Each structure stands twice: as structure tokens, then as C-alpha cells.
Amino acid sequence: MPTMFDVPANDLIEEVAKDLQKVNEIKPPVWSVFVKTGMHKQRPPKREDWWHVRCAAVLRSVRLLGPVGVQKLRTKYGGRKQRGHKPEHFYKGSGNILRKALQQLEAAGLIKYKKEGVRKGRIITPKGISLMDKAAVRIYKTKKAPAPKPAPAEKPAPAPKPEAAQAAPAKEAPKAPDNKS
Image (cartoon, rainbow, N blue to C red):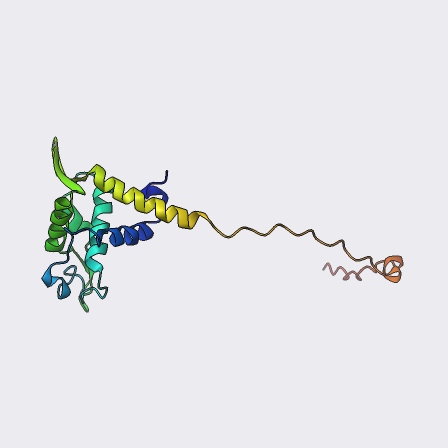
């Protein structure tokens, strides 16, 4: 059975985002229409469903990175800021967006808070793993059935050469004189 590791990440995130739109606990906040996703961005996202796509990406990141907190995700979703003539500088992503996304995913039962020794943070639940794996199976089934390859055609036999071309001996190219001085 294919898992999230067997399908492309972009396809998985898009499919999980469609599933998250059906979950009642995951709703974009009222301020999500106006907000940028980080200090390094110049404009807000253009997609209408960007909140669900970000939640799906966060869910995938939580599964990959293990116990993870807001600060680690801020670093993951950060980027370079264009500062005019000054050199570019790395800025972290928006913590409020990630915090609200984690809280909504936790309320939906897809992730939970856990402390493992020194590490603490949110980990994915079996319900979250099931959601991602079901999406991966759907993607794998659609991608697995490629168009059948055509059978290799036999190459036609080479045409026979005319008899005049076969009988004539090949002429050798004249040799250049050796000029040794």
C-alpha cells in the first residue's frame, strides 16, 4: 500500500487540502484575506484556498519532522527578503498562521502535543496518518496507470544496393605529400 513517501509532495498536499476543506474544525480566520504569510513576502497569497493548502503542508511537515513546534515551522516556511540595494536577509515565516493551523489540526484530531524526553512538540495521530495515506493511495492509483507503450516495430530489411555500386571498387583518397624540412 503506497504511503506519502511514494507520491510527489505537491500532489499529496493538494489532495490533502481538498480533504481538509471537508473537515469542520479547519476554517480560515477572518483576517486570512489580508495577511501575508511572512515578513519576507510582499503580497498576500492569491489562492482562495491557501489556508487549507498551508494546513496540509503543515500536517505533512509534522509527520516528517516528528515532534515539532511553531519556531521550527517558522524557520521552514521562511525565506529571503528583497531589501533593495542592501543584501538579502532570511526572515522567518508568520508564527500566528502556523500557530492557528496547528491549533485547528489539533482540534480536528489529526495531530497532538507530546513531550519525548528533551524534545516536545506536536506529532501526527493515527487519524492524520490515515488521512494522508488515503490521499496517497488515490494519487498513486491515478498516476500508476500510464499509457501503454507501443510494441517495438520490426525494422525493415535494408534495400539491396544496385549492382553497379557493388562492382565498382572504392577509390582511395590521394595522399598529401610529406613535407619534412
